Amino acid sequence: MTQAINPASESTGASSESSTGINRFIKKKESWTKFSIKATVVLTVMVLAGMAFASRYSIVGDPQEVRCIPDYTVYLVDKKDTELKRGQLYMFLSKDLSPIYEEGTEMLKYLRAVPGDEVEIRDNDQIFINGEASEWGLGLAQEKLGQPSSNFHGKTKLGDDQYWFLGTSPKSFDSRYWGAVKRENIIGRAYPLF
Image (cartoon, rainbow, N blue to C red; front, side, top):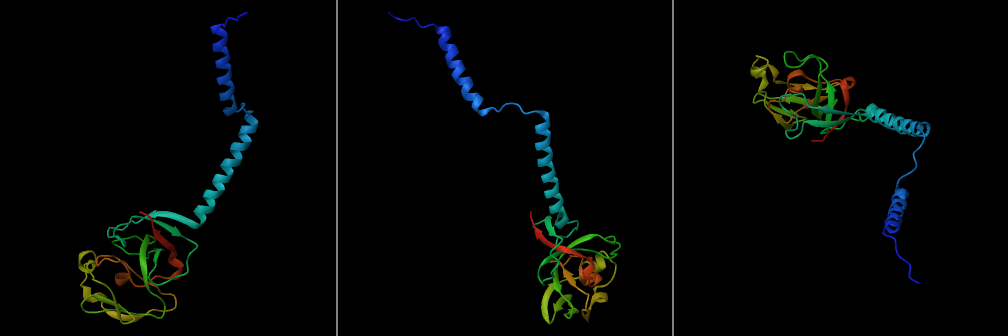
């Protein structure tokens, strides 16, 4: 005796199989209470991680017209890394640099000289640190400050709490114009991002 196959029962069986397969991947709906608890835990962890990151790091843009590092405008600043090393990039708060920058402007420059170093700006506008040539130029003396570059020539030995910061451009507005920075004004080491 042959059994007739009912097409309707076949399609129901296939549909039943595929819905069982899908059900394996779809979880049963959770109660709102359970979902709210999980969401609160995840959000709390994310907020705490964000606060921990923000307490140590800042992501900042370079506000200066002439950038210290020509190809970068965004930096990561490690506020806890304040061990000062010559040649590294740091962010610090400026003193009153009117008319170019207000007091407290965040600046990004390379640390070129530390306490005890001798800094000299010679008649040809060349900067020497401990007798070795460093950056060159006083292009902003006349252009922005209305003073002859000779007003910035001279030699000094940095005191206990004096740090000399320079940019890489002859038109960088830095210690060659306004002198040394105190340690209390140094925010932290900066790393170029993009």
